[in-house]
Image (cartoon, rainbow, N blue to C red; front, top):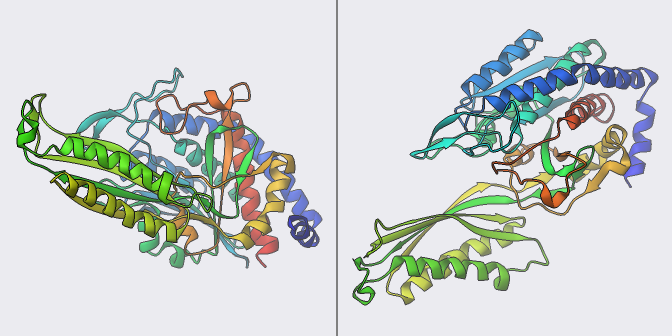
Length: 430
């Protein structure tokens, strides 16, 4: 079926457009060194979600140097650049996320982050441990290339540099959800959204994609267990919230292993933070656990939420404790519109090579690009960033101190973003 779309597309690709493809490749080659330099700058100067002030200034300065119409302060620290060709065509949005993580870098590279800050009351390192620095640099490179070719283009291209993909700080709004709430899609008349994410576990030169749901919905839960404080030597005189919490944690895992139809879609429940007590010989009054829920099906999502509440409250009640469960709905499923995916796949195959494009299984990671793709058709893909001489099992995962990227694939990202904007607008978008 994908070849059918390719042959439908072919008549639209005039010799002038073929020449435009050559120009994109040429300019992508020329901007590659600058893209790597930008990435290293952002890597060395990371900022946390909703605090990307200097990052935003740096991006805006570059976009203004290209004579683009620039808007700052979008969803707090976001930046938008508009390339209006003055000719009819679709309005294409290209997105990059710009925030870093509270992770202390361990990688021995000359541009390693030494930044420290405070996060949730703790002193932490700050690191681009998920590759958002590369996303910024790639989109800045795409803006540079596409602006230089403005006279050959049609429609409008919106460069969206989005803050707080990793989640706004407690008590704040942010990210793609806030951008949508502020009306970015209607304001710019966006027809489609394209986005990429670097992958430290995927060979450089490869691309992963999937029609329909590619990444999971992500919800946050907080469970507070209230017991009765007593001396550690006399546990029978109180109700131990730590023991009860341990039973709840194990009980949550049986929701996935024994009560969820995993042949339908994968699902995950993980506890990432547990807090209780002040010293060794006091059984405390209260314990708190915080975790994440990942689902790829809305009915499964609803059922799992209900089972978490039932499991936690029932286990607590059986021990004479009380469990309070708060589930906060977060990012929806990241959904690749199947029609749009089929339309742009021939474009991707021309840029990356059909042999280098892989259809992936659903990924239990989450992305707030999902908020854009819920409003207009979207296509989100993964770009390889793993050195070829590193085995997949030896590649450090995202969100870890040893996260590392091969920069040689960035140029491919620039080419892909440029070609998606140009070919979709000029051919399929008419």
